[in-house]
Structures are given as C-alpha cells and as structure tokens.
Image (cartoon, rainbow, N blue to C red; front, side):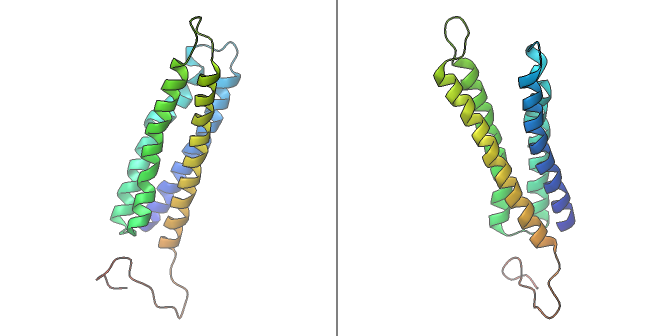
Length: 150
C-alpha cells in the first residue's frame, strides 16, 4: 500500500502540473471561446479530486501517520476553494461583462491557491516516499502508529 501511495501521489502532482499547462492553453487560445478552458475544467473538477480521494484512501490503508493523512485531505479543500474563487472571479464583472479590478484580484488568488495546492501535494509525496522507504541497516524502525509492531 505504501508504494501505491507514492504512485498515486506522483500522479496527483502530475495532474496539478498539467492544470497549469491547461490554464495556459485556455489563456492563449485564439479566439477564446467557451471551450478554451475545457481541459482545465475537467482536470480540476474530476481528475484532481479523484486522485486526491485515492491518495487519502491509500494513506489510510498504508497506515500513514495522522499528519500525512491530514495533508493528503488538504488538496480536496483547496480544490473547493479553487472552484469558489473561479466562480467569484467570473461573477465580478461590470454591466458590460468586462473584468473588474476586484474580479481580477480574485482571479489572482485562484492562481495563488493553485500554487499552494502544488506545495501541499509535494509535501504529501515527500511524506509518502519517507513512509515507503526502508529503514537503513542497523536502524530500528519506529512504529507508524502506537501499539503497532515496528
């Protein structure tokens, strides 16, 4: 299960990296139609949440420490914040439908939240790798949970 946790954490990090690529594709698509951000939307609303749920599941099954499980849950909340920020940014337009300074500020927070999410996933991956790596020779392993044999 610990190797599976590492693999799904890598996949989650790749999905987040692709999310930035898909955002750039949407931003640079000319003419910019409704489908310009389709890949960004599908990845952010389906792929990333599914991989996050798998990461949580494998963290629990791998008997990861509570801190790592909590860290694995965090991207799910950040995805919800992302959706809300995108919704507010799109709704904050003037009467003609043009962007407003407030809406652009919210859109900027959408990008910052994405960067935070990537850093969280890097932390999850580091924790997963540490959990999966064998103890060096001559070192007594520490139990993952209290009462559990080493």
